[in-house]
Amino acid sequence: MRLRASHIGMALCLLALGLLAAGGVLAQNDGAYDAAKNETTAVQEIAIDGAIGPATSDYIRGALTDAAAAGAPLVILRLDTPGGLDGAMREIVQAVLASPVPVAAYVGPAGARAASAGTYILYASHVAAMAPATNLGAATPVSMGGDSPAAPEGDSDGETRDGDSEADRNDADEETTSPPETADNATAKRRKVVNDAVAYIRSLAERRDRNADWAERAVREGVSLSAEAALEAGVVEHVVPASRALLAAIDGTSVETRSGTRRLAVADRAIEVREPGWRTRFLSIITQPTVAYLLFMIGIYGLILEALNPGATVPGVVGGISLLCALFAFQILPVNYAGLALIVLGIGLIVAEAFAPSFGMLGLGGMAAFVFGSIMLMDTDVPGYEIPLGLIGGLATASALLLLLIVVMFMRSRRQRVHTGREGLIGTRCVALEDFDGEGRVRLQGESWLAVCATPVVREQTLVVTAVDGLTVTVEPATDRTFANQSPVENRHGVDP
Image (tube, helix red, strand yellow):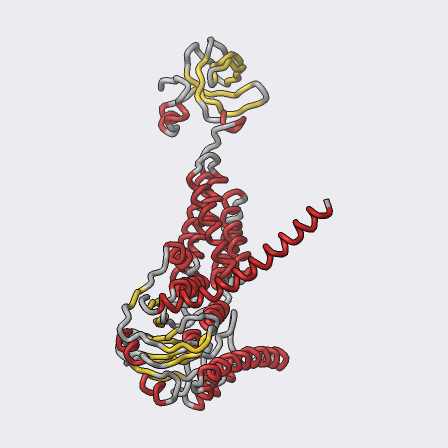
């Protein structure tokens, strides 16, 4: 037994050593394999079009991983973006810095821009290039969920205010003056955000040996540069009209990547444009604030309709799917949960108006909560991540029309005659079952009732109920005018006028 145990122990040790050795060989072979593929594989081009969000960062990180696995000699990251969310931007920057494949950020085609978050990504890339008639900059962090009282020389969207007069700026400062404690706190918070962004972009600039002073100005002052000015300022290395010209311009240069120094031999390489997959496109759609907001509204109203009409099925299924998709989008978007709660409260109050009519008070309160919550919902001023006021106004108008319909139906129901219970018997026609003077039997709603009449009654005479006392009804002879004032529904008992 001891011999067997020792043999087993030795076998396990040899197996472990073998696995470690195999891992080292695989690691070495992996590098050789990538180098071999580098000689034949195409340059991959991926694009960032529009606002940068979670779906964008997921797409870029996956594309860089696939490019490394394929042994691509270079990845061209084409930029045309107004900016985006800070978290998504930092994920892309980290992926670029960790990529063993060189990344060339290219602001193109002509007319494109790499504003705000796009500037950080360009600074992080191994090669920076722009097409003519493009621009970059305006990298001032926008305020989250409100004003930016300490943004120097810039508005909350990062654009400069150099064109404003000194008097205009003074007027604006006076209009935004707040109590000292609030202003000091907001200024300190804003200063922290700006200083953090400055340190971040300067570190990227120093790593890539680019103009760090201008990068700081882009954050503090929100300045921008054209393509030619960026080339002169040392922000980018090349200004080229297309991706093919970029490959010719950088051919033979060396860049420092995570896996070491790489010499680019890409002049004659084919360019493979990588398109986002269905998952990325789906996430890009539902994480748009406007779409997420609409999905949330469809989900809420769908569940309400299902609750009001049990068994309808379709509203419940559509509402449930829409609501889950909206909640998924909300968890990765900068959502203000107070605004979300106000929207739910507002819809609840509008629906409550139908069950507890308050002559519009519940509905008006619900409308106010709905509008305020919709405005507060997206807790950011990042371009491309705000909900259009026109959409909020349209949904508010639709909710107001629903509220008006509820109030009109309620007022109409109050004017209608009651058709059930003791009150519903008053005005109903009946037929005398016998001749009587004072008290006798009548057929009322298919039943025999004791009736009292002030005038003599003959058999089969048509009568009308005027009062109910227990199981006794007071009747009077019906006239043509009585039949003319009553609807066909009230004549459902077989009484012929």
